[in-house]
Each structure stands twice: as C-alpha cells, then as structure tokens.
Amino acid sequence: MTTPTPPADPAAIRTRLATRARELGFAHVGVSGVELAEDERRLDDWLAAGRHGGMEYMAHHGVKRSRPAQLVPGTLRVISARMDYWPEAARAAAEVLGDNSLGYVSRYALGRDYHKTMRRALQQLADFLTAIARPHGHRVFTDSAPVLEKALARNAGLGWIGKHTNLIAREAGSYFFLGEIYTDLELPLDEPGSAHCGSCTACIPACPTGAIVAPWQLDARRCISYLTIELHGSIPVGLRGAIGNRIYGCDDCQLVCPWNRYARDAANPDFKIRHGLDAPRLADLFGWNEQQFEERMRGSAIFRLGYERWLRNIAVALGNAAPTAEVLAALATRRADPSALVREHVQWALAQHAGATAAPVSTD
Image (tube, rainbow, N blue to C red; front, top):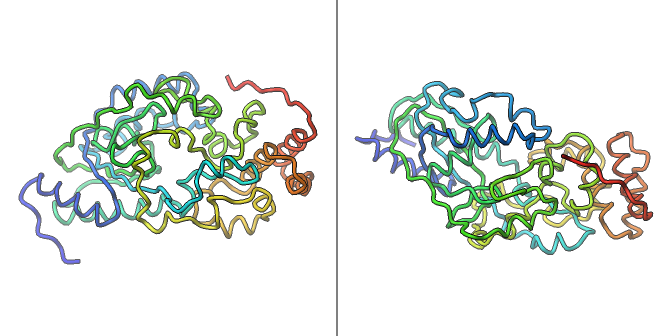
C-alpha cells in the first residue's frame, strides 16, 4: 500500500480512520476522551464489595484502569473499535441449552481466539493513523491491560452499558469484541452513546445464578462466566446445579436481550465454528486426553482455561445431565483422575446421580 497523503485537518483524519477501520473488519470505531471519574467510583465500590471474587488483578493497578493517561503517559484520546462475532451458523443456543447431553460454549469462543485477531487489526489501524497524521505515542489493547473498555466504548459512541453490564449497540446488539488504541493525537471526539434499555429487565431474571443482583450491578462470584473461566479452584457446590450444561462461559443475559435480534453474523473467518463446539456431546469431550485438548483448543480462547479446569467444568455439566448409561460411564472413567480438582467434581456428579444431596456453599 502506498503511503497516503496526510489530510489537512483532524476531522479528515477521523473520516479516513473510519474508512480504514471498516476495511480491517471493524464494524464501528469511535473516539473518546480520558475522563472516567464516575466509572472509577463505580469500580471502587464494586471492588470494595468484593464482587470481583478471585480476580485480584482487577485491584492491582490502582487508578491506571480508570485513568488512561496514567497507564500510557501522554494519552489524550482513546479510539474504541468493535468487531462482531455472532456465529449465525451455530446450532440454536436454546436447543443446546435444552439438551443436557450437550455442552454449551459461549458463542464468542466457538472460533479462534479473538485476542490476536483484534490486536493485529488494531495495530494496523494505529500504523495507518501514523501514516496519515504523524508518528504518535500509542498502545493497542484487547483485554491485555487494565482498561475500562466498556465505559470508553460508551463514551466513544459505540453503544450503552446495559443492565447486565455488557455494552449494547442499537444496530448490532451485544455480540461483539472491543479493542482500544490509546493515542496522544487530539482527534475529534464522538458523542457518547445514549441508553435504550428503558424499563426492560429481561436480563436480570434470566441469569441462572442470580449474578445480576440489581440493574448495572454484577456479582462476579455468582457469574457462570467467572465460575467456568476465571475461577481456578473448586466451583461452589451451591452454584453447580444452576450452571446446567454451560461448560465455558454463559450467554443467557444476552440471549434474552431484545436488542440482539439485530446481532450481525461474524464477517471475520477467524470467528467461524471449530471442532463442532456449537453443540458437542459432553461424554465425547470428557473422553479427550490432554494432548487432544491441546491440539484442538490451541488457538482458541478456551486454551487458556487448561485441561484440568476444562474437565472440571464438564464434570459439573455431566452431574446436571440425565443419568444415562453414557453419562455414568463417562464419569466412571475419571473417578480416579490424577487431578484432585477433577476427582472432587466427578464425585459430586456421581453423587447427584446416586440421589445424594450436597450442602450448599455460601459465596457471600
């Protein structure tokens, strides 16, 4: 590509930036400032309440998460970018959730890991900005640093934060990834997104574990995405039944959101379904050995979960499944698994099928 002629003014830079972003596969880009005082207060309250659970990294960086110029000195603007991931070809979520012999994987994780895809495209966008404006101090992020990405995206006009705490775009729902470019270029600001949840509260009762404790308030300790992805130890017994057959993440609050009738099919081929993960049989997944897990999940967001926690999650789902011969045989193969974590969850699952009652464990 030939080096573009620098445009005459910031508005022209902004226009060309949006055009290049679409060429790179982004559905929308916007520009915000760095003021996040109200969001910082909400974050502080959330951390003080302990709702981050074992995600200690959420508190490790002080105010760098809510003050972009402290994370990257000199930052004046944040470019937020959206890339859609909804896999239109996937088996209907309701069908998978309704068949407890199958495992449900959050739809964002059915294809390749989005981190590399997004980061590569963001860096190309930042390089283009250098070419049409000037060399600029910048860093690109996709879940790779302490960034309040939803608040920044809202301020950049990409949407609003819904009552389930996910970002929603009027024209695309909420099935998309976000990434950021912190820059010292003083680009024109976009208008912040306006809220359109209205009186709707469909997402709150839809949460299987009651993690949305009030509008815009999420207790991660009860969230299935946290329990199946972020939590490293034992899943609280009192929440295992509500997890159902969700083995990696949860989409329930998004599945009921009326705005997701506008969800857009993923344009990037990296987000297409791999290894039949849109409707896999639990017994088959539980039979994978560690080498099979690594070969099949390498390049997927699931890979960072690791084999042990993958088996932990599937054991819980098998405990919630109908006690068929297939389910019981699968669990029996790992009754003496080398991992104490896996053995514990297998024993719980077998006890469920034997009619034993496990005492709930408080997460408060």
